[in-house]
Structures are given as structure tokens and as C-alpha cells.
Amino acid sequence: MVNAGTVVVCELAALSPTAYAALWRFLAGIDVLPWIEYEAALDEELLQLLVDPRAARSDVVDRPWVRLVDVDRALAARRYATPLDVVLDVEDAFCPWNTGRHRLRADGGTVTCERTEAPADLALTSTELGAAFLGGTTLASPAAAGQVRELRPGALTAATLAFRADREPFYPGGWRFPCTEAGALSA
Image 1: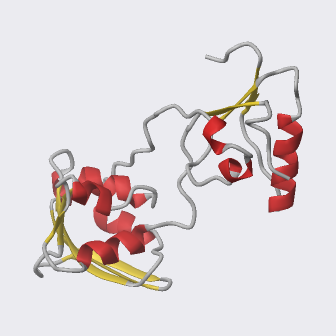
Image 2: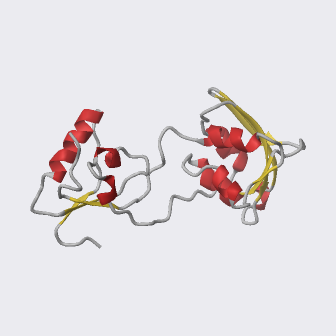
Image 3: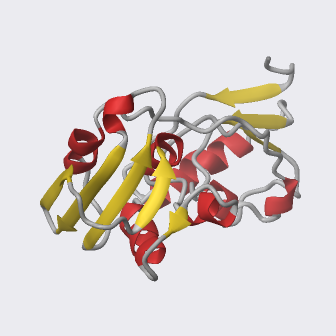
């Protein structure tokens, strides 16, 4: 629900960082409306443009969730940030054909993922694998909560780094910030 007195930005695209900042300065200059509401990725540059980033308000929302129906095909179809050779022991009660060990090898543009009998390096469910698939949630986060088990030392760090993306996946974030001096954009 949008509050009265709010500028709602559905999407903002710019060809350069300078143009991006100029568009936000324009929006922040609409002084008859005290708030801007914008759904942004967590790593979007907007907060760095604010004079006082603490003036922004964020709503906690669900993040994108992906159900991998075919683990081997899905993992082989994506690209990875670093080379990787890891055996994942996946448990999947909903799609039982995914349950088992999958060897994921990635080196540059060459990626393969196939069933294996090799010892597992990481044990996880399809839920954690789906969360990490888009590159926003790290495997280290669910591992800290005991939801991913590292079976070979170093495998968790290697997989966490490889699954990262250049940018966070977009999902509704609902940033709100006031069009006041505290919420003003830096020059």
C-alpha cells in the first residue's frame, strides 16, 4: 500500500553512474512529496548516494526462491565467479530424482554437473541449493545455521565464492527515504 505523499519509483535505469545519481537527485528534489518508495537490490548504489543512509527505511521481505527441478542441468547452465570442483550431496524430498551426489566442475565458460559416486564435499538440501543458485544468498549463511555441512575442508569457502554473482539478484526491497536534508543525496 502506498502512503499519500510518496513518490513511487517502479524502475530506474541509467546508462552511467553519473546519470543514475542525477535521476535520484531529480526524484529527491520533488519537495512536495516527503517520501520516495523504491524496490531495490541490497547492493544497489542508492544508499551510498544518501548524505545520511540511516534515514532510509527498509521492510523485511521474502527473497527470491528457486526450486531446482533438475539439479544437474540447472547447475551446468549457470556461470560461476571462480573455478570450482565440488561434490554436492543433495537431499530433495519434493523432487526425489535430485537426491544424490552431483559433481560440479566450473572453469571459465566450461561447466559440467553430473551424478557421481565420489565422496561428498558438501551436504545440503535442495532448499539451500536453490537459495544459493541465483548468487545472492551465500552457502556460508545456511552453513552457519547448520543447514549445509562441509565434509571436505575448504569446500564451503570455494563453493560460496564460486556461487557469488557480480550483483545481488533483484527482489522487492521496499527502501523508503525522506526527501529532507537527512535523506538528501550527496553531490
